[in-house]
Amino acid sequence: MNYRRLILVFLCFLTFCCTSCSEFSRILKSTDNDMKYEVAMDYFDRKDYNRALQLFDLLQNSFRSTPKGEMITYRTAMCYYLTHDYEVAGYYFNKFVAAYPFSTEAENAAFMSAYCSYMTSPNYTLDQKNTYSAIDQFKSYIEKYPQSDSIARAHELLADLNSKLEKKDYNICMLYYKMDNYNAAITCFENLLKNYPNTVHREEILCNMAKTYYQYAENSVSEKQKERYESCIERYNTLSYLFPDSPYLKEVEPVVNKARKKLENIH
Image (cartoon, rainbow, N blue to C red; front, side, top):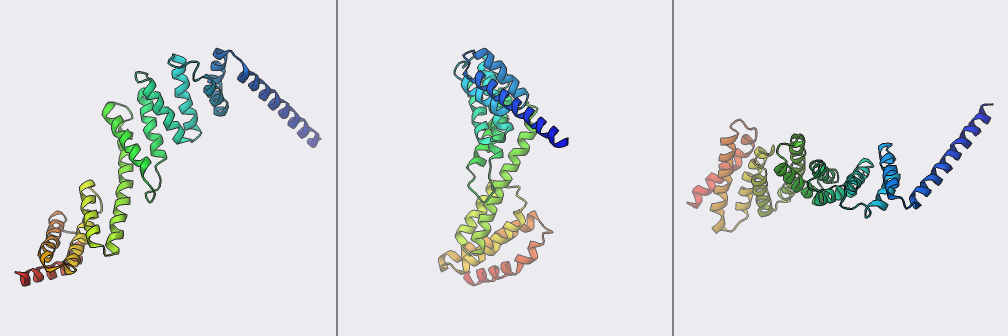
């Protein structure tokens, strides 16, 4: 009995699917664009984004630069966003802002465009093209909509993106440092401190810079040694001034003492 009932339910479901597919095919072939638009809106509201997108695609040209065209472009972007295709969604949100800059949805579309770039930002070890794109978009959004309800969220996401770039730069610095590539390590450390003055790695970086400058001096020609020993001591002094209780001070003190003795001999 249960088996027969299961077959009956399956046949009913199959009949419904066939009827539904047939009805949708009829709608796709229809020349009544206003009807297609209403059906597309209904599919979107019912979260049938695949069918909504098929109809939106057919209607793009017919309603361009009209209120319906505005809604089609915006909901096309939302369809892709809600199906997690962030790259295409970002394209359509950006397209919406360009086509309808005075729309009531322009502000949200600008945020969503930046957010889609944020969502496609890769692991810090990979190329950061999308990360830079997201940063530029969030900065533009913050500048254009300083009173937006989403401004705090935009700052939060922007900070997260910058943190990812900082992590990438920090790891590059440490790679040069561990490879004893003194010149590259120092340049990288200097740039990191310049670009991220509030980095949580500041103490460690100043310590490593002092040690790197010492080794750099040791492996330099005599004409360059004085300047590099002095740079070693300068980084130590900055560390002790900014972080008088830093555990890194004891770590680097022996190196600094050596640098001072070297300078005495040079003088």
